[in-house]
Image (cartoon, rainbow, N blue to C red):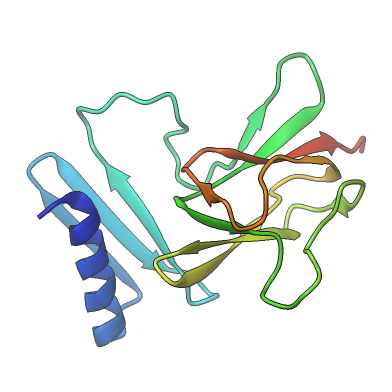
Length: 149
């Protein structure tokens, strides 16, 4: 059974038993699932023999572009990027001011809609992904110009 199938089965097990959190460790792989307050499930998978340039913390969503006050809101998971809930106006547009708790988009992963927050204060200067596009973990979604405080 591959890793994706294991994660899918663990999520089904969590849903069937009403679990809020689950952690499984096999050999060198550690999988941690946690249901957040919006009833979405966060997945954290640690593979010690895989080296990556991605952030170590699964909740660190921002990367800085060199020598500027531009940050990127990046995808916290693999899934399908949506600018809004079905039939609703987009959460943000270019030029909109956002705060750390501002929801900027939704990423659908395994039929679960996960809200993505800006995690920074500033102005949206670019939307880097088209609505309905598949995104990868760590992929930049928005460019945000930091506001001066």
